[in-house]
Image 1 (tube, one colour):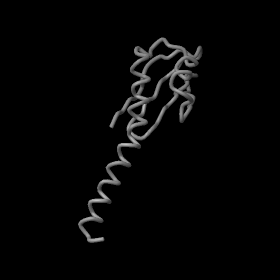
Image 2 (cartoon, rainbow, N blue to C red; image 1 turned 90 degrees about the vertical axis):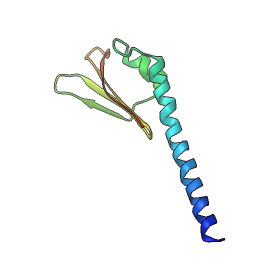
Image 3 (tube, rainbow, N blue to C red; image 1 turned 180 degrees about the vertical axis):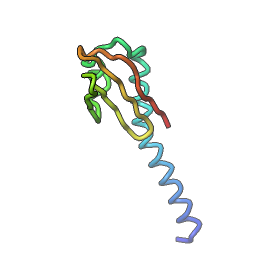
Image 4 (cartoon, rainbow, N blue to C red; image 1 turned 135 degrees about the horizontal axis):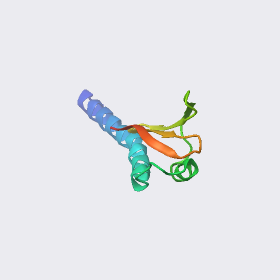
Length: 94
């Protein structure tokens, strides 16, 4: 195979891989958008729609931060002690 063909094949492969990995993020983004506004929603309802979060952290105030992280999308939601969404603390789409 000549160098030009190898280069073109590699570029196509990288492009296809990027599209596949970002597609999951676009899908997850759509789930959260369809539930807007998230403030006031129950944690159980959000998890039922979006799936389990990738990270769960407690704050000193007794709140819980849940994060869904995928290639192409990241959202972090803060919940009060009654598991009600207080606000979106971070959302990034790429």
